Image (cartoon, rainbow, N blue to C red; front, side, top):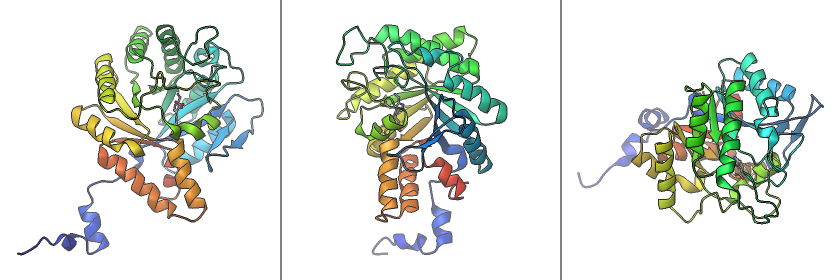
Length: 329
Ligand code: PBG
């Protein structure tokens, strides 16, 4: 034989399927939702920078999730938008807050649905930062250790409401330890923590901040989220989170960070979730709407890339649509 004939195994769809090493199924997908505290129970407001995504009242969330569960959705990630914001994010850890209400409602109506709650303060603070600030701070230098107490309180409050998994996305130092300790003390020994272990400061979150109304009013998040020029920093964050007791790791964003997904995969046995974030979604959607790309093909190619890199789970705004169209089962 004078050369390698790779084409032998590519000649028919059946052969290609037989040889396919990577698949996605419904058990891999987590769909994010934005629930708004509002008196208008029919509130369903399209997010301009994320075509196909909405801010939803409790009732509309219920309707939307009902349809998605009917199509095979198994897991969701919840973000809340409160009526009132203040400097100490009181609504984040209010047992009667919007996320807590939503969790109780969904748990009752869809007992088998896995509900993950995002644990962060940025949607609840008037200044839009992910934790507490010193009086007069105009840079967003979040005070680490006192923020930990509020994050832990928020996580416990979500667990009390019935959340299956809590997902801290704030990037404060020591939050996994603080949250694990608080959950255990409150009796939630069995509640897993899905840590945004490796979260870069990224312009890909732009559209999300419209959706969650959580853009910082001044400064940016670069004193707590990671510098995207760094790899070893991601490894240190990851080892810290293993030590502190995280059960699942999120790597975020996903598309531009597949080297990081693979590296974490190679170095640990902790299950990984890739978060295809708002900007990644919006870019694909926008090009699709314009007819510049084959949207469905690109969605699958982008998600398979994340799985190939080593992610077991994928958090993606495409989850609902993929199941509805039967592209993933
Ligand atoms: C909250 C949070 C953010 C995202 C998830 N949780 C925004 C941010 O850190 O600014 C981004 C998700 C997305 O872009 O889809 N801290």
